[in-house]
Image 1 (cartoon, rainbow, N blue to C red):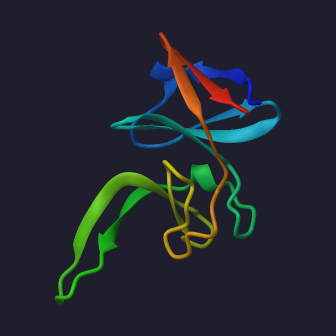
Image 2: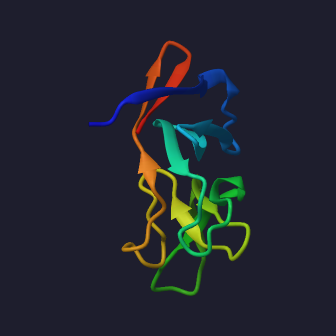
Length: 117
C-alpha cells in the first residue's frame, strides 16, 4: 500500500515547467495542469535522462488533410536528450504506449502537495 509523502507547496509549482523535488530518495517532477497536479519520475525510460527538466509541449494531431493541428499544449513533457514526448497525466510515450515514464498519484491538502509512493 502506498504511503503519502510531502513534496512541496502547491504555490511553488509553476504552470509552464516542472518543479523538481526529491521524495523518498526519488527525483520527481511535479506538474500543474488544468485538472490538478501530477507527478512523474524524473528519469526518461529511453536512456535515463532527467525527463522532467525538458520542456512542456503539445503535439500535432494526425489528419487526413495536408494540415497541422497543434493540440494538448502544456500536457506533454519532451525529454531534452532525444525529444521523446510523454503524457504528463499517464506517463505514456506518445509513439509507443507500451513505453511509459513512471507516474505517481498526488493529493492536495490546503497548499501542501503529497505524492503517494
